[in-house]
Length: 120
Picture (tube, rainbow, N blue to C red):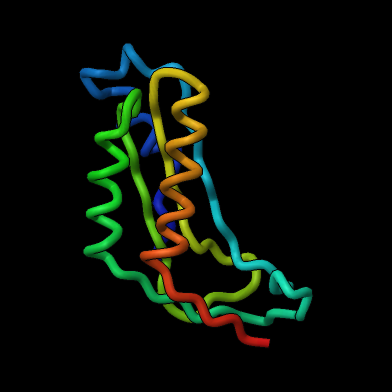
C-alpha cells in the first residue's frame, strides 16, 4: 500500500477556508520496530485495519475543540522492520489542543483500528 505524501496533506490543509486559525500541525509516523515492547526481536508484522472504525474516529477527532483538520492512513499486510504502520496529521489552533488531539487519535487507532501480530 502506497504511503501518502505528508507534504501534500499539509498543503491541502493550508488551502482550507479555516486555515487562518491553524497555529500548529503535528504528524505521527508509526513504523515497525525491530524489537517488541518485551525486548524480543521482531522480523515482521502482520497488520490489519478496521477502515470503518478509522473513518468514525476521524469524524470524532475533526470535531474536537480547536481542531481544524485531521488526516490518517493505516497500512495493511505483512510489513518489514522499518515499514510504515500509520501516518496521522492533526492541525489546530494552539499547541496544547493539537498535542492532546494527536495523542488521543493515535492511541485510539492503536487500540480500536489496528490489529498487529509481531513475527519473531
